[in-house]
Image (cartoon, rainbow, N blue to C red; front, side, top):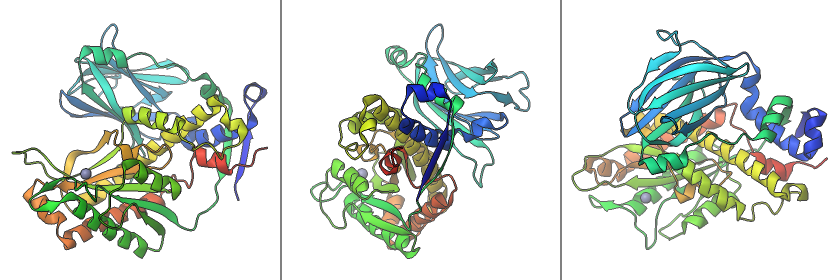
Length: 424
Ligand SMILES: [Zn+2]
């Protein structure tokens, strides 16, 4: 059984239904508990990549919500808004530092009694291609905020820039509410493993290897290894050489009420490229826009109570759900990359973001794993070797185990909670 308790004052209650509050409370409690503790410290600002694509990483002493956006007037800047944080970067006591790649320099300041801001001056027109948080783990004791930038044409940079609209409802609730939520325990987590391509779509083909076959062999192997733990129910989107549409693959995850979706692929690179190694993709910002439109037009909402059918409630639920899904997907992506690296090569900046269709579901955390490049002779030999595939899929299964061992990986998400919650 689950319990939801919410406390909030009359201002909030007067503006929305208590039903909505419960849901929002629960979701905000998941992401915002750290905000109420002592101010987090900024410990380090790091950069990676190059002048075309730059990754900004801010390391913190504890988890924090953040919001990154760009402004183009009077100069091109990346702005990162945080709850009030203390600046504690050794060697940069003034709160200013030099950048790298697309970033010229940066500065930190307190905007108000409860808000801080980091401003990065950029070399030229740029857009944000991804932003996500990575909680502390065994390898890094710091919580990280990651923002990926890409250089683009001025027109595009201007179109994407601007101060975001404040969401006063969620702001108000974040300030005034607190909640606890105990979720129903499930005996087994449900994992959907998707072997990419199949049937009349063979996918990439090189060095006498066909992607659809490699993907299927890997998917069957991963299922075997996951089932061996006794912890999971595993659903395959296909278990033989048949063709499924991308929408059918996404629907398998939804119908199974999956806790995690893993799509397996093998990459190919152009002639003359020496690219090799694995990469893991999660949903990009532009993909999130597509996911929102897809969900808004779907019938995912039909079982929700009538009060949640109001567009404003649905929109809030949808954005909470998508944020939760993307956070969890990013956490799993980092874990699976770390784990795969112990078996074979992975690309530099191996966690990437794209709008792949199979990642578009608004609820189920999802990654697409490119296991290696069939166009690379060594990768192709590895991926067609049952022994190597066995080790690689064991590393993925180990990451799944480690992911579900985390305290912050919950059973359900806001939309599912809405379906489960008795309406007061
Ligand atoms: Zn593929």
